[in-house]
Length: 400
Image (spheres, rainbow, N blue to C red):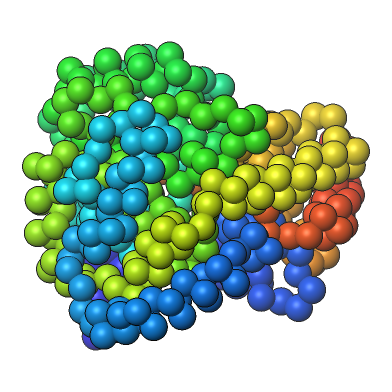
């Protein structure tokens, strides 16, 4: 059979990484590579109870097709929560329920991108967002970051250089995947002020916004948006359970109509029963208390990993201290290879995600991402001790 060029290109760029990551399933592998929340944090009993109640009260509706836009009660819950948490003024008619926020990235590609159009990303950026835009034959341009967020001088140069070819800017301003960085308030304000001068859509990925270890959360970019340029992508995967596959798009009514038209062509109806389960959970349980509990769990595990980095890794290895989210970003000295380190680590049954996968041009060979949420404290400590030993040995051999 003859396949579309987009599948060939995707395979050629990622097959080495795919082959390496298949080793995640090896017995006794200590896995720091994923981006997963911890099953220990799932409210299993509450979700089970909600499922039973939904089926008891209205099984026929729960097991039937639903509307493309999603059930009203869940959209109302999301709207009210966004308004309460982020001081927004959204309405349920500005929200579409998705099969996970990843679907929102794919729909955004369908909506905005023609072959040869430009999509701007933070550098590094979320791998799933990069891959979502590649099938639409977009040109992916990375813009560097600093501790306050996207470098706006560099962003302006890219916007001016490519002009009308720039259709979308994708950003992850809160506890970013993969670096864990968060944008400052001023950088958010200045970013919106800059992009208001261009005909471009902003995809704001809010997956990690509520996983904060400081108790402080900045307002989303949508709060500062006056022109309706920001499309907010939200998800229950990180704050409830990823297996429910419930996310959402929040955008202006004009954009929502266009998204809805496209969604109806590829996904006529989401999982009605799961939407009803989440809505019932929000009706009857305190999700803020649940989020507080998982934040406490993740913060403890973050601190264990940071302690191990400080204790076992050479002083010339750099790493960040994330104020939220699921990841720590580690950078080796100049000229060293995270891919080579990974090959050595896999032999000792430790795996992580090499950083080059998170760059549009795959330019960074010396950084890697560590996930700390989905392993026990004991496994984090054991795996980081092994990884620290391997790193020390690798660097010492390079220096000889």
